[in-house]
Amino acid sequence: MLGTAQLSNVLQIVFNEISAAEISQLDTLDQLELLSEFKVTTDDVEKIADGEHPKFGCIERDGKNLFRYRAKDSRIYFEVAGDSVIVHRVLHRNTFADFLFRTNLGDVDEDNELGKNKHFWELIEEGEKARRI
Image 1: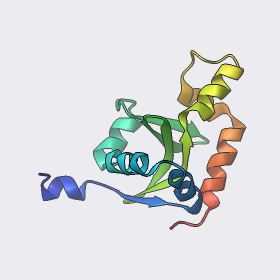
Image 2 (image 1 turned 180 degrees about the horizontal axis):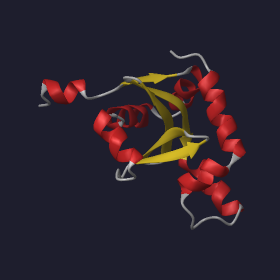
Image 3 (image 1 turned 90 degrees about the vertical axis):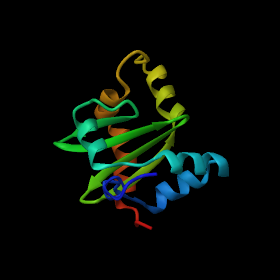
Image 4 (image 1 turned 120 degrees about the vertical axis):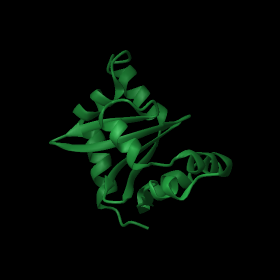
């Protein structure tokens, strides 16, 4: 059982219309599994920024950090704003694996390559502008 101190360390997760629609495309059991394991604490954010977290990554652009969470075949892209995790997109893993393969970048760091790709940032900006639910 988690203590009160551990619970207060967990950040609130907020989906926007786009990310909510994307997660709803998953099978119900996959949704439940993904949502039950996707928890972000302030400690996680510090480890992500230091590159020391196995399930999270960080993509930087213009001094702004966007975080990525890997879970099976899904990738959750989010930012941290205060005590909230704002989920911008929930995308299938092969979306970017195919991109990397087609551009002959299969063996490079996925987060670094995504950070350089303008189409990726267009997806994220679309999510940022979507209404939060």
